[in-house]
Image 1 (cartoon, rainbow, N blue to C red):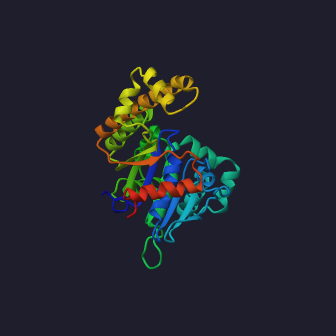
Image 2: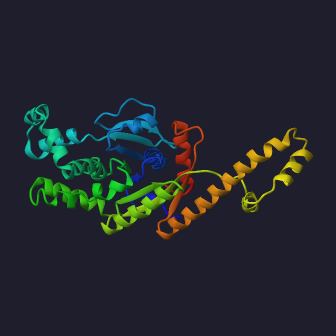
Image 3: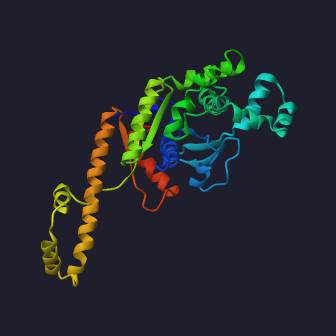
Length: 326
Protein backbone atom coordinates (compact mmCIF):
# COMPACT_ATOMS: atom_id res chain seq x y z
CA UNK A 1 0.00 0.00 0.00
CA UNK A 2 1.41 3.43 -0.98
CA UNK A 3 1.18 6.03 1.76
CA UNK A 4 1.11 9.68 0.84
CA UNK A 5 2.54 10.91 4.12
CA UNK A 6 5.67 8.86 3.47
CA UNK A 7 6.09 10.54 0.09
CA UNK A 8 5.64 14.25 0.65
CA UNK A 9 4.66 17.03 2.99
CA UNK A 10 3.42 19.40 0.26
CA UNK A 11 0.42 17.93 -1.53
CA UNK A 12 -0.48 19.88 -4.69
CA UNK A 13 -3.94 19.09 -6.06
CA UNK A 14 -4.82 20.00 -9.65
CA UNK A 15 -7.43 18.85 -12.14
CA UNK A 16 -9.52 19.90 -15.08
CA UNK A 17 -12.34 22.30 -14.23
CA UNK A 18 -15.44 20.46 -13.08
CA UNK A 19 -13.62 17.42 -11.73
CA UNK A 20 -13.93 18.56 -8.11
CA UNK A 21 -10.28 19.32 -7.37
CA UNK A 22 -11.13 21.74 -4.54
CA UNK A 23 -13.36 19.13 -2.91
CA UNK A 24 -10.61 16.52 -3.24
CA UNK A 25 -8.02 18.93 -1.79
CA UNK A 26 -10.29 19.60 1.19
CA UNK A 27 -10.94 15.89 1.76
CA UNK A 28 -7.22 15.17 1.46
CA UNK A 29 -6.42 17.80 4.11
CA UNK A 30 -8.96 16.20 6.45
CA UNK A 31 -7.59 12.71 5.77
CA UNK A 32 -4.01 13.81 6.48
CA UNK A 33 -5.03 15.59 9.71
CA UNK A 34 -6.43 12.43 11.27
CA UNK A 35 -4.83 11.12 14.46
CA UNK A 36 -3.75 14.43 15.86
CA UNK A 37 -1.87 15.84 12.89
CA UNK A 38 -2.05 19.42 11.64
CA UNK A 39 -2.58 20.31 8.00
CA UNK A 40 -2.74 23.61 6.18
CA UNK A 41 -5.12 23.86 3.23
CA UNK A 42 -3.99 26.59 0.86
CA UNK A 43 -6.02 28.33 -1.85
CA UNK A 44 -4.23 30.30 -4.59
CA UNK A 45 -6.93 31.19 -7.11
CA UNK A 46 -8.98 33.64 -5.05
CA UNK A 47 -12.28 31.79 -5.53
CA UNK A 48 -12.97 31.16 -1.82
CA UNK A 49 -14.00 27.62 -2.73
CA UNK A 50 -12.58 26.25 0.52
CA UNK A 51 -14.70 28.60 2.63
CA UNK A 52 -17.81 27.51 0.76
CA UNK A 53 -17.07 23.81 1.25
CA UNK A 54 -16.52 24.20 4.99
CA UNK A 55 -19.46 26.59 5.26
CA UNK A 56 -17.40 29.31 6.87
CA UNK A 57 -16.86 32.99 6.13
CA UNK A 58 -14.40 34.09 3.46
CA UNK A 59 -10.83 33.17 4.31
CA UNK A 60 -8.55 36.09 5.16
CA UNK A 61 -4.88 36.38 4.36
CA UNK A 62 -3.98 34.52 7.52
CA UNK A 63 -4.02 30.92 8.69
CA UNK A 64 -7.28 30.00 10.39
CA UNK A 65 -8.50 26.71 11.89
CA UNK A 66 -11.56 25.55 9.97
CA UNK A 67 -12.07 21.90 10.95
CA UNK A 68 -11.21 19.17 13.41
CA UNK A 69 -10.42 15.73 12.02
CA UNK A 70 -11.13 12.37 13.68
CA UNK A 71 -8.61 11.75 16.45
CA UNK A 72 -8.21 15.43 17.26
CA UNK A 73 -6.25 16.56 14.22
CA UNK A 74 -6.69 20.12 12.97
CA UNK A 75 -7.15 21.62 9.53
CA UNK A 76 -6.11 25.21 9.01
CA UNK A 77 -6.78 27.18 5.84
CA UNK A 78 -5.21 30.14 4.07
CA UNK A 79 -6.28 32.09 1.01
CA UNK A 80 -3.05 33.44 -0.49
CA UNK A 81 -3.44 36.86 -2.07
CA UNK A 82 -0.66 37.81 -4.49
CA UNK A 83 -0.81 41.51 -3.61
CA UNK A 84 -0.54 40.87 0.13
CA UNK A 85 2.21 38.31 -0.50
CA UNK A 86 4.15 40.89 -2.53
CA UNK A 87 3.81 43.43 0.28
CA UNK A 88 5.22 40.83 2.69
CA UNK A 89 8.01 40.15 0.20
CA UNK A 90 8.89 43.85 -0.14
CA UNK A 91 8.98 44.22 3.62
CA UNK A 92 11.07 41.07 4.09
CA UNK A 93 13.73 41.87 1.50
CA UNK A 94 13.60 45.63 1.10
CA UNK A 95 12.11 46.87 4.43
CA UNK A 96 9.70 49.13 2.57
CA UNK A 97 7.01 49.08 5.25
CA UNK A 98 4.63 52.01 4.72
CA UNK A 99 6.22 52.71 1.34
CA UNK A 100 4.98 49.32 0.17
CA UNK A 101 1.46 50.17 1.29
CA UNK A 102 1.72 53.44 -0.60
CA UNK A 103 2.68 51.51 -3.72
CA UNK A 104 -0.47 49.45 -3.30
CA UNK A 105 -2.62 52.57 -3.12
CA UNK A 106 -1.02 53.81 -6.32
CA UNK A 107 -1.80 50.53 -8.07
CA UNK A 108 1.84 49.56 -8.47
CA UNK A 109 1.39 46.24 -6.65
CA UNK A 110 -1.48 45.16 -8.88
CA UNK A 111 0.53 46.27 -11.91
CA UNK A 112 3.55 44.22 -10.84
CA UNK A 113 1.59 41.01 -10.24
CA UNK A 114 -0.28 41.42 -13.52
CA UNK A 115 2.57 42.43 -15.83
CA UNK A 116 4.87 39.69 -14.49
CA UNK A 117 2.81 36.51 -13.94
CA UNK A 118 5.98 34.58 -13.17
CA UNK A 119 6.58 36.79 -10.15
CA UNK A 120 2.97 36.27 -9.10
CA UNK A 121 3.45 32.50 -9.18
CA UNK A 122 6.66 32.78 -7.16
CA UNK A 123 4.71 34.68 -4.50
CA UNK A 124 1.83 32.20 -4.41
CA UNK A 125 3.95 29.05 -4.38
CA UNK A 126 6.49 30.66 -2.11
CA UNK A 127 3.95 31.20 0.64
CA UNK A 128 2.97 27.52 0.56
CA UNK A 129 6.61 26.41 0.54
CA UNK A 130 7.34 28.67 3.49
CA UNK A 131 4.60 26.88 5.44
CA UNK A 132 6.23 23.54 4.56
CA UNK A 133 9.62 24.71 5.84
CA UNK A 134 8.33 26.51 8.94
CA UNK A 135 9.38 25.07 12.32
CA UNK A 136 8.28 25.56 15.90
CA UNK A 137 10.73 26.50 18.65
CA UNK A 138 11.26 22.83 19.49
CA UNK A 139 12.21 22.10 15.88
CA UNK A 140 9.02 20.28 14.89
CA UNK A 141 7.26 21.30 11.66
CA UNK A 142 4.41 23.73 12.24
CA UNK A 143 2.30 21.64 9.85
CA UNK A 144 2.61 17.93 9.19
CA UNK A 145 1.24 18.51 5.68
CA UNK A 146 0.39 21.44 3.44
CA UNK A 147 -2.29 20.83 0.80
CA UNK A 148 -2.53 23.30 -2.07
CA UNK A 149 -5.71 23.69 -4.12
CA UNK A 150 -3.78 24.59 -7.26
CA UNK A 151 -4.71 25.92 -10.74
CA UNK A 152 -6.24 23.54 -13.31
CA UNK A 153 -4.27 20.82 -15.09
CA UNK A 154 -3.70 22.91 -18.22
CA UNK A 155 -1.77 25.52 -16.19
CA UNK A 156 -0.27 23.50 -13.35
CA UNK A 157 3.18 22.80 -14.82
CA UNK A 158 3.81 26.41 -15.76
CA UNK A 159 2.47 27.55 -12.37
CA UNK A 160 4.82 25.27 -10.46
CA UNK A 161 7.84 25.70 -12.71
CA UNK A 162 8.37 29.23 -11.41
CA UNK A 163 12.13 29.15 -11.73
CA UNK A 164 11.88 29.06 -15.53
CA UNK A 165 9.17 31.70 -15.46
CA UNK A 166 11.29 34.28 -13.65
CA UNK A 167 14.62 33.42 -15.32
CA UNK A 168 14.17 36.13 -17.91
CA UNK A 169 13.00 38.64 -15.32
CA UNK A 170 15.60 38.32 -12.61
CA UNK A 171 18.83 36.33 -12.99
CA UNK A 172 20.23 37.54 -9.67
CA UNK A 173 18.91 39.15 -6.52
CA UNK A 174 16.12 38.38 -4.02
CA UNK A 175 13.46 37.40 -6.59
CA UNK A 176 15.84 34.96 -8.26
CA UNK A 177 16.90 33.53 -4.90
CA UNK A 178 13.29 33.19 -3.78
CA UNK A 179 12.39 31.34 -6.99
CA UNK A 180 15.29 28.94 -6.51
CA UNK A 181 14.28 28.29 -2.89
CA UNK A 182 10.74 27.53 -4.04
CA UNK A 183 11.94 25.15 -6.74
CA UNK A 184 14.12 23.26 -4.26
CA UNK A 185 10.94 22.37 -2.38
CA UNK A 186 8.75 21.78 -5.43
CA UNK A 187 11.22 19.40 -7.09
CA UNK A 188 12.11 17.53 -3.91
CA UNK A 189 10.59 14.38 -2.35
CA UNK A 190 8.75 16.76 -0.01
CA UNK A 191 6.29 17.50 -2.83
CA UNK A 192 3.77 15.44 -4.80
CA UNK A 193 1.43 16.75 -7.48
CA UNK A 194 -1.90 14.92 -7.66
CA UNK A 195 -4.28 15.23 -10.61
CA UNK A 196 -8.03 14.83 -10.19
CA UNK A 197 -10.08 13.39 -13.04
CA UNK A 198 -13.43 11.88 -13.93
CA UNK A 199 -13.85 8.69 -15.95
CA UNK A 200 -14.64 10.76 -19.03
CA UNK A 201 -12.62 11.20 -22.19
CA UNK A 202 -11.64 14.88 -21.95
CA UNK A 203 -10.61 14.94 -18.27
CA UNK A 204 -8.68 11.67 -18.65
CA UNK A 205 -6.84 12.91 -21.74
CA UNK A 206 -6.01 16.20 -20.02
CA UNK A 207 -4.75 14.23 -17.03
CA UNK A 208 -2.50 12.10 -19.24
CA UNK A 209 -1.16 15.23 -20.95
CA UNK A 210 -0.65 16.93 -17.59
CA UNK A 211 1.35 14.01 -16.24
CA UNK A 212 3.57 14.06 -19.32
CA UNK A 213 4.19 17.80 -18.86
CA UNK A 214 4.97 17.43 -15.16
CA UNK A 215 7.45 14.65 -15.90
CA UNK A 216 9.10 16.67 -18.65
CA UNK A 217 9.55 19.54 -16.18
CA UNK A 218 10.94 17.08 -13.60
CA UNK A 219 8.15 17.91 -11.15
CA UNK A 220 7.13 15.06 -8.82
CA UNK A 221 3.93 13.34 -9.92
CA UNK A 222 1.88 11.96 -7.04
CA UNK A 223 -1.39 10.13 -7.70
CA UNK A 224 -4.37 10.32 -10.02
CA UNK A 225 -7.56 10.76 -8.01
CA UNK A 226 -10.56 9.39 -9.90
CA UNK A 227 -13.45 11.41 -8.52
CA UNK A 228 -17.25 11.02 -8.61
CA UNK A 229 -17.16 7.28 -9.33
CA UNK A 230 -20.68 5.90 -9.69
CA UNK A 231 -21.47 2.31 -8.66
CA UNK A 232 -22.09 -0.29 -11.34
CA UNK A 233 -25.70 -1.34 -10.84
CA UNK A 234 -25.62 -4.14 -13.41
CA UNK A 235 -23.21 -7.07 -13.43
CA UNK A 236 -21.24 -8.01 -16.57
CA UNK A 237 -23.94 -10.37 -17.89
CA UNK A 238 -26.63 -7.72 -17.43
CA UNK A 239 -24.48 -5.11 -19.17
CA UNK A 240 -24.07 -7.38 -22.19
CA UNK A 241 -27.78 -8.22 -22.17
CA UNK A 242 -28.70 -4.53 -22.13
CA UNK A 243 -27.26 -4.20 -25.61
CA UNK A 244 -29.74 -6.73 -27.04
CA UNK A 245 -33.46 -6.67 -27.78
CA UNK A 246 -35.26 -8.22 -24.81
CA UNK A 247 -38.55 -6.34 -24.82
CA UNK A 248 -40.78 -9.41 -24.78
CA UNK A 249 -38.80 -11.15 -22.04
CA UNK A 250 -38.88 -8.04 -19.85
CA UNK A 251 -42.61 -7.60 -20.40
CA UNK A 252 -43.24 -11.24 -19.39
CA UNK A 253 -41.07 -10.87 -16.30
CA UNK A 254 -42.90 -7.73 -15.20
CA UNK A 255 -46.25 -9.41 -15.77
CA UNK A 256 -45.25 -12.51 -13.80
CA UNK A 257 -44.16 -10.25 -10.95
CA UNK A 258 -47.61 -8.69 -10.88
CA UNK A 259 -46.51 -5.25 -12.07
CA UNK A 260 -49.53 -3.55 -13.59
CA UNK A 261 -48.94 -1.67 -16.83
CA UNK A 262 -45.63 -3.44 -17.21
CA UNK A 263 -45.56 -3.05 -20.99
CA UNK A 264 -45.34 0.74 -20.64
CA UNK A 265 -42.26 0.35 -18.47
CA UNK A 266 -40.31 -1.76 -20.93
CA UNK A 267 -38.94 1.08 -23.06
CA UNK A 268 -37.86 3.32 -20.12
CA UNK A 269 -36.19 0.34 -18.42
CA UNK A 270 -34.34 -0.65 -21.57
CA UNK A 271 -33.25 2.93 -22.18
CA UNK A 272 -31.85 3.25 -18.64
CA UNK A 273 -30.13 -0.13 -18.87
CA UNK A 274 -28.63 0.76 -22.24
CA UNK A 275 -27.41 4.12 -20.93
CA UNK A 276 -25.83 2.42 -17.93
CA UNK A 277 -24.16 -0.14 -20.22
CA UNK A 278 -22.70 2.65 -22.39
CA UNK A 279 -21.35 4.42 -19.30
CA UNK A 280 -19.75 1.22 -18.02
CA UNK A 281 -18.02 0.67 -21.37
CA UNK A 282 -16.84 4.30 -21.49
CA UNK A 283 -15.46 4.11 -17.97
CA UNK A 284 -13.71 0.83 -18.77
CA UNK A 285 -12.01 2.46 -21.75
CA UNK A 286 -10.91 5.47 -19.68
CA UNK A 287 -9.52 3.24 -16.95
CA UNK A 288 -7.39 1.58 -19.62
CA UNK A 289 -6.02 4.99 -20.62
CA UNK A 290 -5.21 5.83 -17.00
CA UNK A 291 -3.45 2.50 -16.53
CA UNK A 292 -1.26 3.44 -19.48
CA UNK A 293 0.18 6.53 -17.75
CA UNK A 294 1.67 4.38 -15.01
CA UNK A 295 0.47 6.39 -12.00
CA UNK A 296 -1.31 4.79 -9.02
CA UNK A 297 -4.89 5.93 -8.48
CA UNK A 298 -7.31 6.62 -5.69
CA UNK A 299 -11.05 6.50 -6.26
CA UNK A 300 -13.71 8.62 -4.60
CA UNK A 301 -17.46 8.00 -4.87
CA UNK A 302 -20.05 10.29 -6.37
CA UNK A 303 -21.80 12.23 -3.61
CA UNK A 304 -25.48 12.28 -4.47
CA UNK A 305 -26.22 14.86 -1.78
CA UNK A 306 -23.45 17.20 -2.89
CA UNK A 307 -20.09 18.08 -1.39
CA UNK A 308 -21.15 19.45 2.00
CA UNK A 309 -19.19 19.07 5.23
CA UNK A 310 -20.57 15.58 5.85
CA UNK A 311 -19.54 14.65 2.32
CA UNK A 312 -16.00 15.92 2.92
CA UNK A 313 -15.64 13.72 5.99
CA UNK A 314 -16.96 10.77 4.00
CA UNK A 315 -14.43 11.36 1.23
CA UNK A 316 -11.65 11.78 3.79
CA UNK A 317 -12.62 8.42 5.30
CA UNK A 318 -12.46 6.84 1.83
CA UNK A 319 -8.97 8.25 1.29
CA UNK A 320 -7.89 6.89 4.66
CA UNK A 321 -9.17 3.46 3.70
CA UNK A 322 -6.98 3.63 0.61
CA UNK A 323 -3.84 4.43 2.59
CA UNK A 324 -3.71 8.22 2.89
CA UNK A 325 -2.09 9.33 6.12
CA UNK A 326 -1.84 5.87 7.74
